[in-house]
Length: 232
Image 1 (cartoon, rainbow, N blue to C red):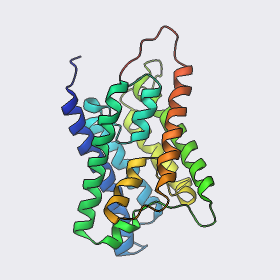
Image 2: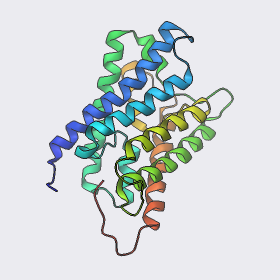
Image 3: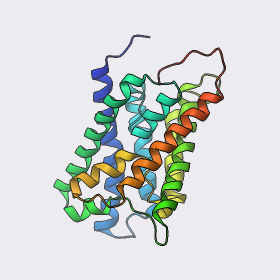
């Protein structure tokens, strides 16, 4: 299989991250502007989950379809992704995410962009929210590393986009009301940049990145000793 040049993979990450985030952000905009009867919290979670699946279907064969700095770092820790490409991927993901938040700001208002920011739920401390984000990102990377990179798994390959999108739908539904439901540093940081509000952003950088690394290391532990590292 021919090696895809880095610049093409980075462009795929920019477009894929943009599409993933914008699908989810539009769900929040619909909730904020059209009312609860139009779309509910499960619909917003579905928008993020299926939006991610669609973008993986579109570009997963080009860039791996990460669209998430924690996933890129986790796959690097699992030796499923070249360490030298981690920072360029992060840059591409941030560009795509900022473009999605910026378009939302242009089409609606700063108030709608503010509605996309992630914060802990009512009565949930910053520490608890970070643990929730860490645990669910840890589980997320375990799922991705298996369905997208481990040939031993019978569901490896074609089922990957649906499995990954379904995980985000599930996590956003059951954990989103508690932690804010980010599981992705770029998802929280990019709208914060456009809104100019960075309250609680550290939670969604530290928790997911730590969870991603832990997931990658655990996946690496279960690899066959003779298995060669394979880029994701």
